[in-house]
Amino acid sequence: MNRKSLLIAALSAAFLAACSSSDNNSGTATPTTPPVAAAPKNVIFFLGDGMGLTTMTAARIYSVGEDGELTMDTLPETAFVKTFSNDAQVTDSAPSMAAYMTGVKMNNEVISMSQNTTAIDPITDAAGNKLGNNCGASNGTAATTLLELAKTAGLGTGVVSTARITHATPAATYAHICHRDLENDIAAALVPGGAGYNSALGASGIDVIMGGGSQFFKPVKDGGKRADGRDLIAELKAKNYAYASNTTEFNAIDGSKSDKLLALFTSSHMSYDLDRDATKEPSLAEMTTKAMDVLARNGKGYFLMVEGGRIDHALHETTAKKALQDTVAFDNAIKAAIAKAKLTDPTLANTLIVVTADHDHTLVLNGYAKRTGKTTSANAGVLGVVKNYVTGAVDKDLDGAPYPIIGFGNGENRVQGSRASQASLDESVTSANTYHQEAVIRMGAGGETHGGTDVFLGAIGKGSESFTGTIDNTKVFSLVKTAAGL
Image 1: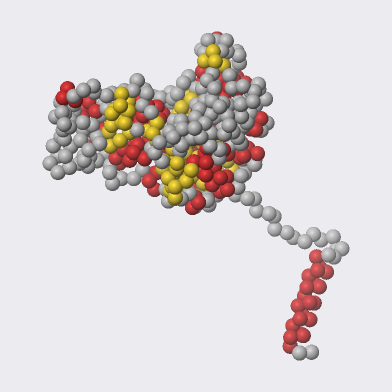
Image 2: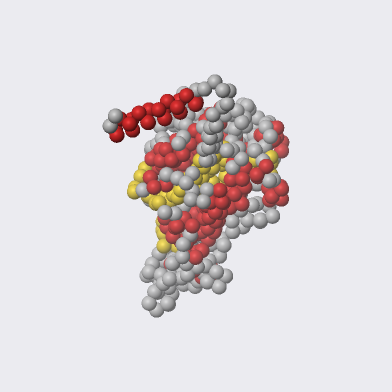
């Protein structure tokens, strides 16, 4: 035999011996390595309602100065997102969030439905409120959401917001309806087994529900707006949800030992962060990390949506200070979530965190202002008036009056005619908590509109490298879906 033949024979003998030992009848089981459990796959989707690029910039200056960084600024992957809806150049929150959640471009005011769904205004219900469903029997079909896909995959699911939990943005994750104002119907979609329940949420429903809006869960007799007499809070408690209505009750719940959590802190929206009483309402960061504790009990992973909902409301009011403070509170929640996620997933190899906005507003930064640094009790910062970047003197408009750094394209505070009457305008006025910044086009109180500009998207963690360039909001759905393996 030559050397090659000897080698082949030796290998053949070794192979036969191995087969013989594994197939013997000695009754001794061959040791095997137990399979390694797959790491949980988590998605946290942060949505700053109305948080356009200019609002982000102003919030950065407000919080940390021109050369500082918010947590959002440090996310390694970024993109621009186009936000127009199916029927409008400027979207409202319902179809823009629904586009993220379903990948479908739909009409304004529609919540997670097919593109052919028509938004039909609610009618007056038995309690005299415009909360009656008038959608019609053949008005579109439900569009599957990321949260529903997560439920189907056996993941934990959660929705957290500083707005009413039945408001457009959170509703788009779990409800399907022709008009965003049908908040009684939207609330009913959350109660497993109840009338109007969204069966796509599975037998057990969403694991974490936190925000405001208890009025749509309570019957009229208890101060709510439900004409059907149902007490949805009681129904959810009966489904084994731990319940909190204030910070004390919230703090008493150990998230790491709770499978279900319902927290409704206010009748309508939660307070602006600038006005928040911490003894009554937890911060968005506290709600986010508590939700993560509950959802981490699911060994497969989870999908969590977190909304900074009141950024949008302050911008509609043109009260910029409130909007900037709520943006900072939103950023603090992102920071807290990243830190907490890294405790169990240090490189975020199995955790995707996405941060974006549903639409822009008309906030602008005026003039050639000198750098202001961050806002403090002694420094108005970006909330002040424009000062010349060379001389430091207060700049004046054509009427000889100072003007604020922050303004709006439209809003309620428009000076009629000459601005000479604003000659005494100073930073003590423009930096006040309730100051309404000036607008170019006059609208009714609270009537400042959304803007149509592209918005920022930042991402970190598993699959984040796919978020790049300028993309449509519907594309975000497929990117998250792929990254999460849904």
